[in-house]
Image (tube, rainbow, N blue to C red):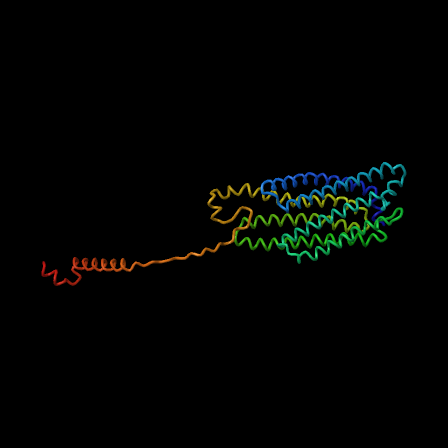
Length: 351
C-alpha cells in the first residue's frame, strides 16, 4: 500500500520500540506506587478481596508488559543486527509474520487487552451492586474480543514466508478485535460513570458537599483514563484501516499504556482516600461532632435508627385533692384581705 511505503516498516518498528520503552518506564514507576498504595491500605484497613484482585491484576499487566518489551528488543536485535547485513534483510525479517517472536508478542498483547477489559467489566459489576444483568452485553463483547484476538494468532501461524499484515484473512480478524475492545471500554465507562453520578445525587441529599466532591473526583479519573485508552485504540484502528505502518507504533505503545491507565486509577483513588482520612480530624476537631453527625469520614452516613419510647403516668388522686383544697383556701384568704370577697358571718362576729 502507498501509506505503508511512505513509512517504512523497519523505521516504524524502531520508533515503536523507543515509544514503548518510554511508556514502560512510566508504567514501572506507577506500578511501584500503586503497589505501595495497595499494601499500605491493606496494612491500615485489613485484607480486602478487592485489593488482592487489584494487586494481582497490576502484577499480571506488569509481567505481560515486560515480556512484550523483551520480545520487541529481541526482534530489534534479530532484525537490525543479525539480518541487517543485506539491504532487504531487516525488512524481510519484519515481514515474516509467522515468526515465533511476532506470534509470541501478539499473544501477550491480546492477553493484556483481555485482562484490562475483564477488570473493566468486573468494576462495572461491582459499581452496579453486583447486578449480573448489567454485565451481559460487556461479557459478550469480551468473548468476541477473545475469539477475534486469538484468532489473529492462529492466522499468523498459517502465513508462509513474507506477507503484509493488511492483506489476506488477517484484516477482518484484526479490525473486529480493535472495534470490539473499543466498544467494550466505551460502554463500560459510560455505565460506570452513569451509576456513580446517580449514586452521587442520592448521597448529596445526606452529605452535602463532601461526598459530592469525593465522587466527582472518581468520575473525573475514570473518564480521563478511559479517554486516554480510547484515543489510543481509535488511533490504532484508524492507522490500520488506512494501511499505514504507523499502526505498529500505536500497537506497541498500547501494551504498557493499558497498565498505565489501570495504575493511574489505583493511585488517584488511593491517594484521595488517604488524604481524606488524614485531613478529616482537622475538619472535625471535636470527637463528639463525628458521633453526632452519624457519619464516618469517607463512608456513607448511617441510616436513621427508629427508637420506640413508652411513657407511663401514675396519678395520685389523694395528693391532687389536697392540693385543690389548699389552693381554694389560699384564694379565699387573699380575697378577704383585699376586701373583694364576701366576708363570712363567723369572721364578723368574732371581730
